[in-house]
Image (cartoon, rainbow, N blue to C red; front, top):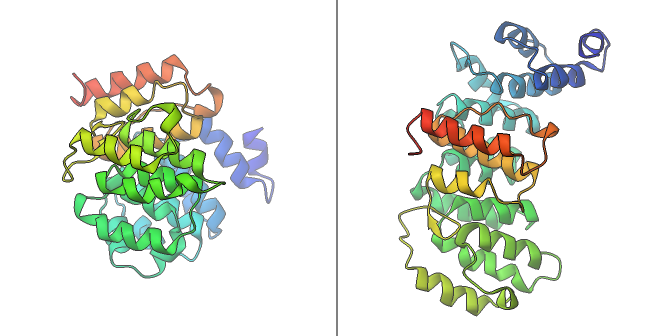
Length: 272
């Protein structure tokens, strides 16, 4: 089906995505598609290449795609380049300009993947200009800065976002507050203060961020396939862990995914 669709105008992005997910592509195949002028095809080609273990020999041509006017292509370029240890996406984001505007809340995702502690002011600028959404609250939580608790707790009283605010607070600070007090901002403030967190270290689930903590988090039944994919991206960007996990075919708690995560972390010495 994928091969047939590749020869059908308008079906190429679907065909390329399908062939990539079925692990039917090699770097040379993807390189050819990346030369196409259509942004939607280039974006799928970058996503396909990011699934492969072999990075490009030269990422500089892909770094030029950061100047695109297409939001999805810009994000796929940022994500792939970050996996391939290029500092160009984060540098461009820090300098502001069109990339920051193009990425929207995905700019927070980029900081989650490769940002540093001193990017706190950048994040503050970003959240001030973005509409609050469940995805934004989740991304801010995964940043892991202890100071984000006040931003997240602000939405505990929001009739639309209260549930997402609780979920985000638990992502960052764990089950610090009993369920019956989950909408009480003062209870969160007191509980987080009792954790005595160090502002110079990222946190996840109330603990200092580490690959082991994220790996344990991946086993939680409450995580969706999207949640798992975001955490696999995080581990790959920060620890060089490449997991070929076709999450479209698994339930969120599929034990093979968790086993693969732990095995890959041990292989790179990030989990003992």
